Length: 214
Length: 214
DNA sequence: CGGAAATCATACTGGACAGTCTAGTTTCCG
DNA sequence: CGGAAACTAGACTGTCCAGTATGATTTCCG
Image (tube, rainbow over all chains, first blue to last red; front, side, top):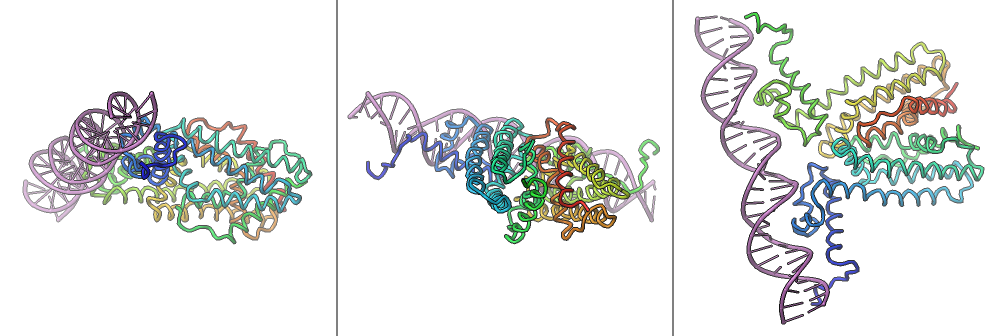
């Protein structure tokens, strides 16, 4: 029948699976693992509970898939941030300030914060999953940042970096420590003022370049 | 009777209240807010459930008291760390390295990490409590660090700091960003190696002093 | 068309848990 | 001593929820 004819490039089952995945992401991020209910997931996905359990063995597995799936998105996101701010840059200070801003912007987005809260909250309950999330997501993205910084060295904008990953952590720490802690601990209420972020980014880059300028 | 005669400088009720408080701290830190059960608190405190509810109106209030009570302890702890490493120091590099170590040591202790996980996890459910914890604990301790750094300026070991709190955040970010994130996200399993902490602290101080040495 | 597979709505099971209630015991203090 | 207040053990209520079961309906595909 025509009314029920959805465009369906991947099959009904796969479509529902994706709906469940999306709904579960939302529910887990909002309520945490224990606070999330499978009934709510099913309802939000527009699917019966039975279908949820057909696609995902149980609540734990669903959680694991949700969490690990977020890493791909993040990696792409950061890769483009590095590319857009550093590739082709001619001035280190300007490029790093732009990068700092991008990082602050991306990583204080609500859903990013909620995900980080979720992973941290469940780090003891699901050490394998959260550990995997950390190494394949967080750590990897800092290694990538380290490599991006070495490209600045290659172009004569920074001095030689003996341990690019450590330097990347230093940059991230200078830029993110203050706003990230506030965002994580104090809830997602008041956003930091752009002028404050501007100050933080500028001063962070000042300190960074005092050590690492070419 | 003699056998039941405990030394009791504060009254029976107060003693039990403290036992409940201690037990609840343990249970909340271990299982999170939703995972904690009032029955377990009562059992661990060696007290009946009724007594728990006589001392603390309900689970939410108990949680709030537990969380906010941790700040006093932390403040004292950090104040002595600043005093012991900075007061009377004559060499900035040496003093700051010692401070960095102390911070890493204190703040990656298991119960500190569990507390931070708890606060972060419940930041959305209890925004007032967690927000208060953050401003009166975390932020305040960084302001204190800022003041401690200005004492180094006063003694000619660092240059003038126009915004000591921001500089304190930079120091903390350089020192703690990497090990703290790992500890928070990846669970409380493997401790970072002391040699790695040593490297991090040394390099952090190098960068810090490149900008802020006298 | 027609049967198999997927899905649906809904009800159910079993267990956990916050918070209350009761009835009996212990402790304190005048 | 004696009564009031604190405390205890344990049962109980109401709710929520993971996961399963059932029986009807829809979709897919040969």
